[in-house]
Length: 444
Image 1 (cartoon, one colour):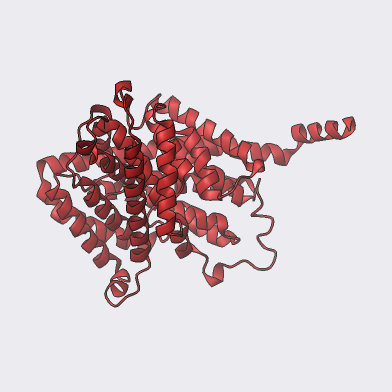
Image 2 (cartoon, helix red, strand yellow; image 1 turned 90 degrees about the vertical axis):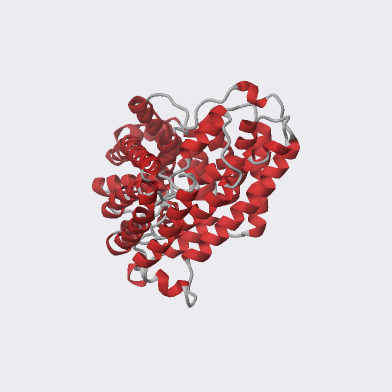
């Protein structure tokens, strides 16, 4: 026994391959943290451009949004196939795939760079999108690229680790990164990967802290906002959030896979289809003084920090513009706009529950709707809790997330990201030969 342990220790200390793998994970996690911060800065600048332009020249978006959507959808289909939408379905498809050629296509440098640039441009012209899903694809691509450069396989586990580090870097939410990797990406727990995921998340989070400092994504909420908690609000937010999330999920899957007489031909013309979606989004953004466009981050933070509610119609219109933006063919994620929709679902309950603070209602709405969209209740609960550093609503938020996700699962049995991921399965020519990818897909 002693000799066996000694050999194991000696191997761990002297194995060149093990040290190479450790270097890949260390450098990869650092690179994901740096890239996440840089992407966040670019996206924030694009969002500021949208807000300032909407304030000064709102009607410019009748041209900017449809033209931008059309051009970006066309460019994505023509030059960056696989960069459409969130990026999480692509990461799931890449992890499921046994084909190295297929993974290389979905997570290539060209696709990833196009994803980042076009997401920022989409935000600038008023797309109701976020940067968080694209950050997951970015994190996966960095990890896989470094492993390929170092001559290491094990792509399955690397994609999982990259996704976790991407979420942690995007939101400054390390626990949510771990939970997202296990609950949404892996759909199972693998003890061989848990340590690597945790290490990558910690390193990516530390890099983010060094570059931008300690911050809360949605700011700090005063403690007095949670003095009274009504369990009827939990039920309301869970039911409305679950139903709304299921409607969004089924709508996006239907539009993304549309093959009818009208939508089918339009989907085959990316510029026209994107421009039509952009025209509707731009018009609604103007009518709602900018609320319907953009990531929704500003109004949501204002609601959570200061209790300033948006109009009651914000939630359904924001849901609709996010649906169109995601289905248009341009790159962009769902996290930020979905959290914005959920916050305003909760805020809409305020007139009927005057004993509860509107900020507490908004948080319950966020977790209920987000859990309904992604059907990953623990991820939704942890991510909202970490973004606000709020511990007074732990039990109500967890109950809302579980109930909301359960209702959504009844109405939309296939989780959104997994349903969308099948569109990115390998083409026949990308299928591996017998035995080609067996060693490459093992966990590290």
